[in-house]
Image 1: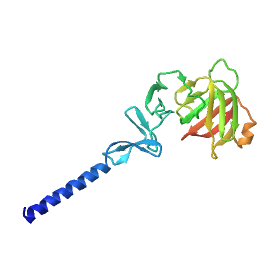
Image 2: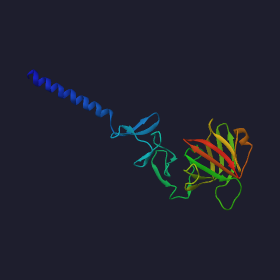
Image 3: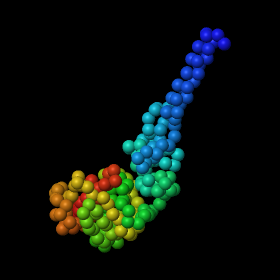
Length: 206
């Protein structure tokens, strides 16, 4: 083989190796990182977010949601797959034991016996950074409370508080209180707002 043909062959081999290398580093599909599943899109070159991939939903940070309500009102289970449950075709919200309720939206209930609603709250307590509610709540994925709601079964529910949680009493005005003050207060309606898995607001209102 003469030098010219050998040089051409060497260039072709190197080009093929480089092409293969890049094809290995840019491929579409699921990737598991830091305890979460992500979906890499070959076309855009980015991880997808805020959308469905098949029966799985990717959150705002790109991580696949599990044991959560999606922003458009569907419930995904422990494996991330849609369970078939949605706010549009069921009248019940099923509890999964005493694990934290992390689905973003608003949870609310009446703290006194009322024949006009099923969302009766029997007790409310705070232990450290855990808010525990015993009773039946109404849940809506809309944090402003305007979305369609589902009735949660009567059970014990726990929510994760954090340093930025706001505690309020609302009558004709909004009164901000400390956590310790809130623990000693009571009102006819309990409302809990969850965002990114933690409680951002909790209050009693008239």
